[in-house]
Amino acid sequence: MSPNVESSGAETAAAPAAPALPPSLGDQHASLFAIVTDALRRKILDGEYQQGDRLVEGRISEQLGVSRIPVREALRALQSEGLVRIEPRRGATVASVSDRLAQELVEVRATLESLNARLSAQRRDTSMVERLRCLLDTGRQAAARNDVDALVAVNAQVHDLVAEGASNEVLADMTRSLRDRTALLFAPINRGRALQNWYDHAQILEAIAAGDAELAALLAARHVNNAATAYEAAHAAALGASAA
Image (cartoon, rainbow, N blue to C red; front, side, top):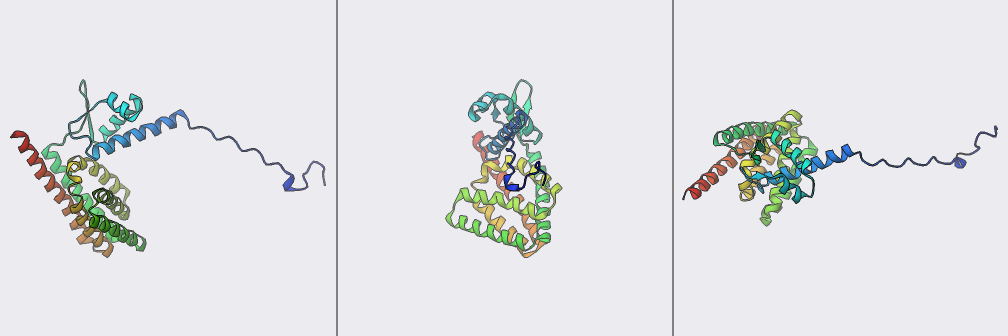
């Protein structure tokens, strides 16, 4: 055996592991931008910021503990999503939805949600049915407790699960965009309708699990229209109160 060749693998010293490289400044910036964008989007969709509310960069940066740069970029990103409006000399505000635009958004969303439910029912498998049943159990328990926070969370999961079951990424992207924009309408009444929303969702999930595509599609469209009717009533009441 050559003296230059080790006789045993055990005698071979392992090469030291290369030190982990810290994230680049670009990665850190991208992560901060995403975090700020998600935080602002959530505040808008949860109704913390209402239609027409001013979004002051300095105030938001102080609240989130970041500089103004990621806040400014997040506001621009949310503008592209239709959630924020930015005007010269006025700055950023939460987008306002006119009555006509509200009707158009609801019409399109009802169509997309209906298609989501139809495809999900047609493409369901054993695993998806089990997940639907599990979510139904969770929702029923929350409803029995009248746990509004839990119901709001379950209702959000319903939309995600139905979209996943539809297995159509183009449809999912389109629906997500419409869902966020119509959330500007529904956010103020969302908690008050949490139980009714769950009852609507439970019927949709049951239809999907049973493979009844026509019924699932009908119920999904009806659910969106029910929420729109509730928004219109609340909006009219608010206008009447302000005029009094």
